[in-house]
Image (cartoon, rainbow, N blue to C red; front, side, top):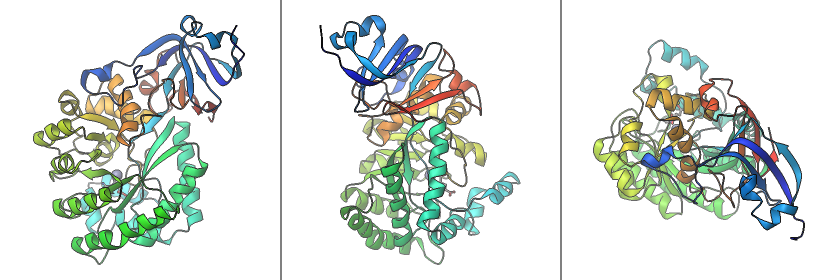
Length: 426
Ligand SMILES: N=CN[C@@H](CCC(=O)O)C(=O)O
Ligand SMILES: [Zn+2]
């Protein structure tokens, strides 16, 4: 008889455990996105280190010697429920003060995003508010937003700076993200976005020089001092903001300093961002509403993730990115909420609903893009994004035997519980 082993958690006999992968895949592409590796009437065990120790039907689990005598600190009956991996949000801007509800009304009345931007609103408005805000104010705002995301099932988040556009405020935002990473249940991939816009009174050339010569060196020094951490470098590559040459210079400089390239491109105008990203070894490019066919081919060939953000097209009433074409042509597709003062969305279930309805992704593709592929877009699918032995015990419990209800039931999605590292956090 095997000795008794104790474990943090067993979720017992769920109608569906949606594993996403059962072979340790780093990501999924093309038709494989429709295979969710679903186990019916299955259980999950999480060890005391917060990692998944076993997943399978009772019959499968009883083949494991240790399982027969195992005990569980929490033993939860999941009958009639379905279990998904915690959602992974591949793109967000969660650190800022003020809001732009006044601009929402202007946009509804016909003003475009770039019209408002040129008049000093948009990102410029948020930059002024965020520069003026204290660490404490930003921390409190971020915590509230993270809590709301967690309630909707997000357990991994890519989160950007970018409302400072100068060294001190960019560092303040990254410090606030580090504090959240050290204290909050959501795991955060931190992104430096000092080139989110051209600050008032500067030219794009001057702003590029400031990012290259002041901001990046300061970010690297603060990272070395342990004051911040930073995983990715980003830029808003857009007409009238940063062009091809400026984007290439900033992104490659960040890469040289050890950051992964993960940037905004081909959003409102075609900029050859996809082609640039493939050329310089980007991990991910977000938006891509205006991506070219050549750009799609280049991204597919170089394994560059397309992080698609259906909330942006919805709120700006623009044409969504060609998700179908991208998936069918082999691009690695992930999803993000794009939470920011322009697109105030904290819910990955809603993002999946929009992806399915407005971008013609299947429900399975939307789920893979909001779990395994979003985790992989920030190099974290070794621990996030699927229900497999050795990964974090991060789960969303859906109050229905069919997981698809979490996407189908709009707005008040049936998220019945959220677990992080085997602990119930919602
Ligand atoms: N497009 C650029 N950045 C954000 C919007 C930021 C803002 O408007 O404050 C985005 O991803 O949608
Ligand atoms: Zn963005």
